[in-house]
Image (cartoon, rainbow, N blue to C red; front, top):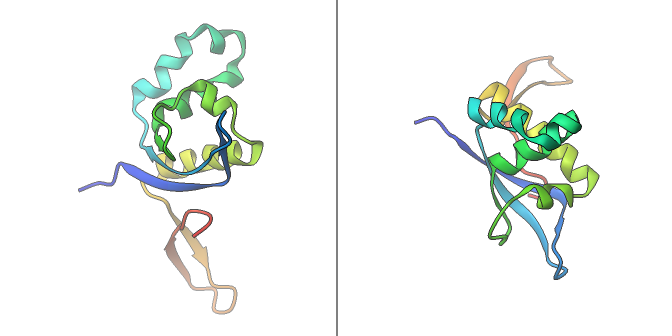
Length: 120
């Protein structure tokens, strides 16, 4: 069975209005609809950079104990967390997994490693 949900841990974490930090989350693989639907959104038409905000809000299925993930949550992320999630999205959607091909600096042998969410 193919894995379609991937856990992550944000470097800093989302700070909610009550002062709670939310770091652990899940992201699912994106669908064609996830990438096409935001193109019709007026916020993306005014500012194409907003596409990634909507896209992340669609594919992040869990973040800490938040009941809902929406664009306001994504807008409220610290910059480092936002960059981390963009990279994580690219990795799982291009590769279908969160593994990386690495090379040993000593023997030059190549092998895959499963990435561990930050903080573990």
